[in-house]
Image 1: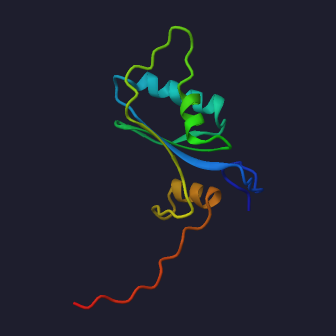
Image 2 (image 1 turned 120 degrees about the horizontal axis):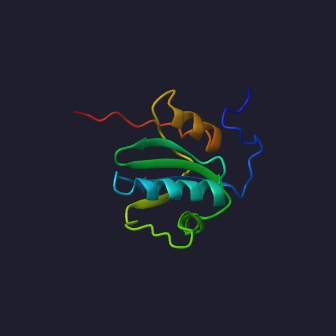
Image 3 (image 1 turned 135 degrees about the horizontal axis):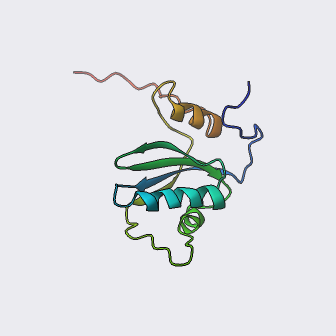
Length: 128
């Protein structure tokens, strides 16, 4: 089956998957767009927003960089550029376990990049 995300089927032990959350509003939408461009240019050319809404952007990416390097790459500035208020951002590495809505875009990305989520363990029934 062809991988819909265009990534190699060969997993690299040094590559990690991250979710980058960027708070955005109409006041700082251009800043959020520039941060996304920086992620594509300096971290992962295939980085693309999973969602964009009135409150922010969620970006999934794959890289050999660690979170602090991703953060630094996001904030590379052109001369005279100011990012303004950048308090509400998060770079989060994705682990082995996850849950998502069935047949959602995120489910397919996580399955192909992170792997199958952990199964729920059998737990004794609680007495009422």
